[in-house]
Length: 210
Image (cartoon, rainbow, N blue to C red):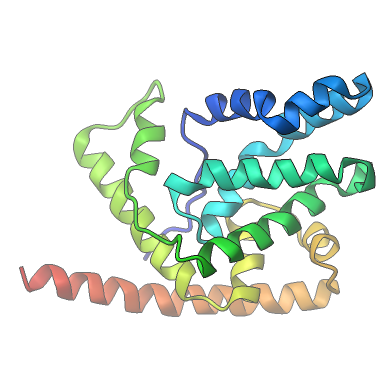
C-alpha cells in the first residue's frame, strides 16, 4: 500500500526564504513601516514549509514548488493589510490552491524524482542509495495517486492526512460545514486506497515487462 507520507521542503528552502526577503516584495516591505515588515517575515517563517508541502500535494512539481511558494507569499504581501491575524494560514492555502491550479493548467506538471532524495540527503541520518531509490519511487507513486483524485477530495486529504490539519480548521479554511469535511475525508480515503491499488498494479505490471 502506498503510504501517505508527509513531504517537507528540501534543504534549499532556507535559501528560498532568503530570496523571498530580497525579492521586490521584500524590498517594498523594508520601506514599509516596521510592523508590516515584521509581520511579513513572521508569515514566511511560520508558514513557508506548510505552503511548500501543500503545493507539492496539490500537484506542483518539486522543481517549481519554490517559485510557486514565493508567488503565494508575494500575493500575501500585496494583500497583507486585508488578511486578518487569525486567517493567515487560510488565506495562504486558498492562494496556494489558485497558484497550483494555474500551474497545472499551464502544463507545469513534470515528473521530478529528486525532491525527497535531495532533502533526505541533507539530513544527518541520510539514507543509503537503495533507500533513496525507494523513497523516490514512493513519492512518484504518491504523486500519481493524488493526481488521479477528485480535486475537492484531494484538498481535504492533503490537509488532513499529509499536513495534520484538524477537521475544524479545514472547515474554516475552505468555508465548509464540518460534516461536509468529514464526508469528503471519508470519500477521499476510499478514493486514495482504490487508486493506490490501481497505480501499484500498473507499476508492478510495468516492472514485470522489463
